[in-house]
Length: 300
Image (cartoon, rainbow, N blue to C red; front, side, top):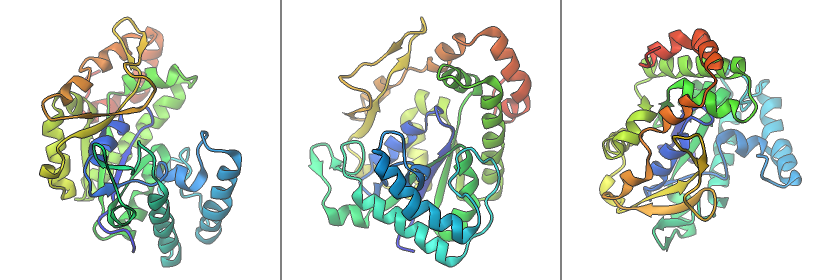
């Protein structure tokens, strides 16, 4: 395979995976493709329509034809079947190609603050990609493709996750299914694969340096090579339920040194979001997901 020692961050949409991605992208040895794994092959809403069609026809359609399955469907919560070496090499080629093309401020432009990557440095960097929702069930396939792959599964209190999804129009049933299926899958992978490591969102925002050290160690990354962390500013839920953006634009990249990085986080963000949940919706979600919440270490 072209990509050596790749890293995949697994988790839920709205579950905080961007934080872990940005900590990892702060290391100069890692670069990401033009979107999440599913977006690379299927396109994303922000892209021109022609680009989405191009991705579907040139990337996704051949894989579906050759493998007989919809590997990158984020709404399919089922284990993917094994793939042929031909399909595996094509997936690896696409991810490497899209990594070389990702050259925006939030992707692979800056190796350090105000220091840009060269094209050769991007090409030689290790792949970092993100698998959310149903794409988490691609883990066994990717583990079979790469002998030296590392996975991180980011888990979070599902009630905060529920508030975020309900605010965007989802139903309690939809969020509960997502949380149960993906949460249980990540626990299973962590129990079966020594290279799949669970990370708690709550520990990342309360002890960021401890968690970064742990994550870098699992990924074989030298923390001494990261003088500053590049994090993206997003709107946060305040205690009163208001959404506040402390930047000029959403996802603006700001560089933090080790003494200031903790100011990026609000340790009470989960509480703020959970307090905005309608009590009836919270009870319904807890009834559906009680076993998963408890197994992930959250009291009900």
